[in-house]
Length: 229
Image 1 (tube, rainbow, N blue to C red):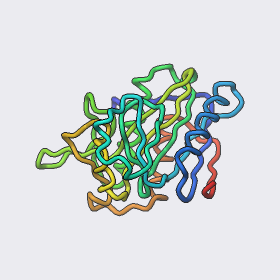
Image 2: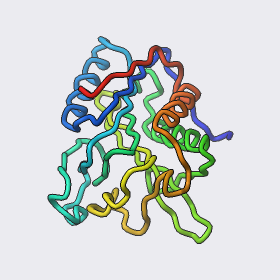
Image 3: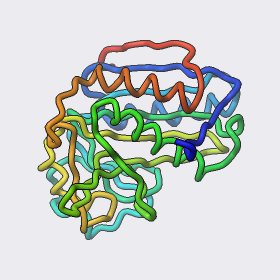
Image 4: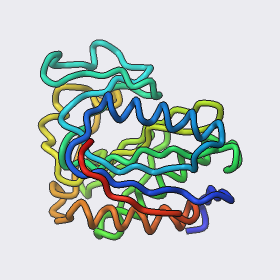
């Protein structure tokens, strides 16, 4: 596609995959620390793939009315842009800690490239997804006119270094999204690969993400797999 942006960097990126369920406070603390070290030039960029236990996160624009069932799951202030979102088992979360000082300092292009990364990766599973103006994330358009969100994007920048990232629904419990108005959008639902009749293991998605990340963002320096901290 001619409109695919490429956000290259002269650096290479560390690629990390955690097994098990990573508590959200630990992930947030790690990202904060890693971003600070990237800003200082002490460590390379990193992409971290993981799953969380069931929880809701509140972005800086979250509205109290959009938390429909308080107390259902823990709610964590995330510090990223956006509103409420859900994380849980069966959802692949990719936290993206990249140095945009080396990648053009263009936030809009960065978000478009994250969207393209998801679109290309989901195409590996014969799922066609699309962007929507005014609705950050990636969407499935059904033949009957319905549109459902299959992947969310929420990022934060500190001195041009990103953290937070993307979340793709592989086979989560979609009923868990019912406790919030996801991303403040009540007119559209959410879906997953499983709900679309597509079987995919988490490792399959990780391979696709790795391939298309390199196509769009540049080479990966090393890949590691770690157990639950």
